[in-house]
Image (cartoon, rainbow, N blue to C red; front, side):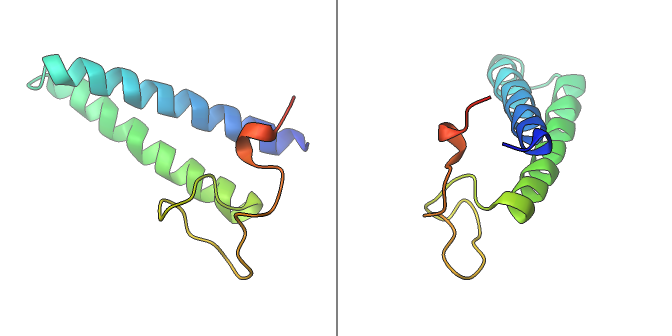
Length: 85
């Protein structure tokens, strides 16, 4: 697998982890403006990196969470969870 593809997937994983972590924190601290600003910044970065990945390598997920170019790309392999380092 190309190095850039692995790096983008790693960045997506890091940003998703940060968003989940801040989401859990904000569930118990909903008035923490700093945490909310960090969450929004990470969520914005995550959307950009996912869009970049999908434009280069195809959809990361299915069921309406990602767009597909023609022809239907979801059946293309490897799927994100099948990629090995």
